[in-house]
Length: 68
Image (cartoon, rainbow, N blue to C red; front, side, top):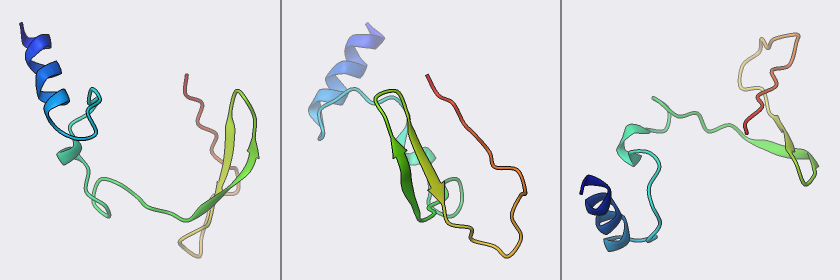
């Protein structure tokens, strides 16, 4: 019953797709970072993005995040 209620709620408001997370949980600058970047390589299986450093000191070893 709860699933049907969630579906009806999702379909009642734009963009009319099921929501995966609570949108009010994110606030730019507090819980969400917005950093300029560009796509270095785009392939069928992945997209490699290089973000612009926002501070004078950055890590020597890059961070790779893999999401399935």
